[in-house]
Image (tube, rainbow, N blue to C red; front, side):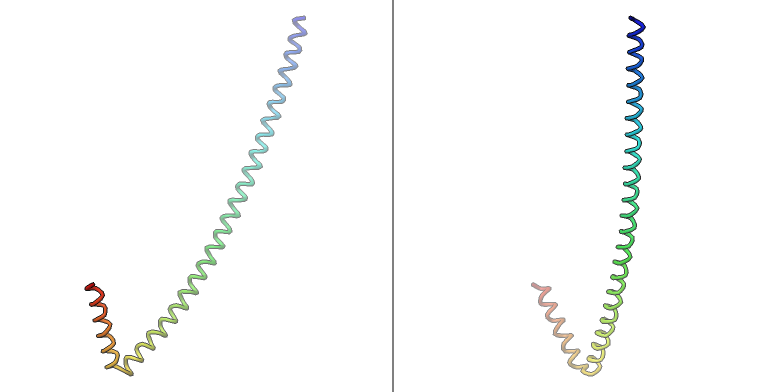
Length: 106
């Protein structure tokens, strides 16, 4: 009877060990799958961030270039007006200076 109990206990222990090994393998496989998915998601997010960064940089460059061109045109027009009407430009500058002084005094 003692031998029968030992045999049952050994069988139970073997089954428990197998179940634990199976559970360990399942957990390990699940962990690996999650790790791979996470790495893929990180890789995709990094690629998208790089693409977005490139788009934003291109947009900023275009905006800067168009603004620079507009400012060059504005500067040229202002210079032309000052050359064409020097007295009026001097009086306008003087008036703007007076207004700024008045505002600062308040």
